[in-house]
Image 1 (tube, rainbow, N blue to C red):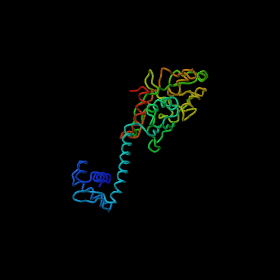
Image 2 (cartoon, one colour):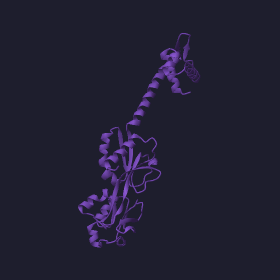
Image 3 (cartoon, rainbow, N blue to C red):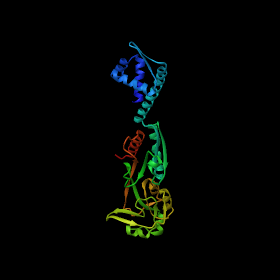
Image 4 (cartoon, rainbow, N blue to C red):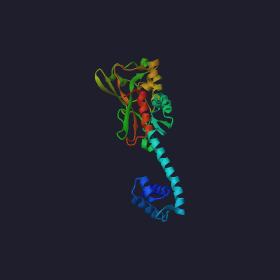
Length: 295
C-alpha cells in the first residue's frame, strides 16, 4: 500500500462524505476506494470512518488524522512542485574546478554575465592545476585543458588554446636563437609539471612532426610561474595563449622557431554523468560555449 495514495483517498472520502463520490473524484472504482481505506485502517490499527447506509463520517481518531493528512499532503505537494521547478530552472550551488591561470585570465571575466542571467545559481569556483577527482571532491563540472579527456567523464569541447614556443630576448641574445628543432637540445627548458607529454614537445613544421625531448632546468606546477621565469631569461617555454599573449604582445617574450608550432590543445568542460544533467550544469556549459565562440 502506498501511504501517500491512501492518505489522498481518505481525505477525498472525508471531504465528499462517501466512497462513491470520492471514487468519482479520483477516477477510481468504489471497490478500490474501499480497499484503500480498509488497508489504511489495518495499517494504523484504528477505525477512521463511521459508516452508515446514508453517510460516511470520520471518527474522532479519523478527524484528527484527516487534519494531519491535509497538512502533510500540502507540504508534500509543495516539495514536489519545488523540485519540479528546480528541474527546469537553473538554481542551487554550482561547484566548478578550473586550472589556476585559465580561471584568472579567462573564466573570471565570464562569471558576472552568467550570474546576471541565472541569479538563482550560487557559483563556487575552485582553482587548482592538479587533476581533481570530481566525484570524490564534489565538483559539478571541471574545465580541463587536454588533448585527451578522461574516458570516465563526459566532455564537451569549448575552444582551443594555441601553444607557443617562446623565450625572452635576453635569453636568446645570450644563448642564440635555435634554427632547427634539433638545435633545441642545446638550450634550457622550463617545464610544466602536469604536462601530459612529460619532458618532451611535439613540433609540427615544414618537415612534418618531430619530437623534442629535454631535461628541464626548472619545473613548476603553474604556467604563470614559468612565464615569469622565462621573462627573466631562464629558458624556453611552451605555454598556452591565455598565459603568454600579453608578454608576446609587449615583447617580453618572442617566438622561438616560429615556422614550427606546438599543436593546439583543446579546452573542455567535463562532468561525471550525462544522465539527469542538472540545469545549472547544462546552462553553465552552454554559456561557456556561447562566450568562447566554439560551435
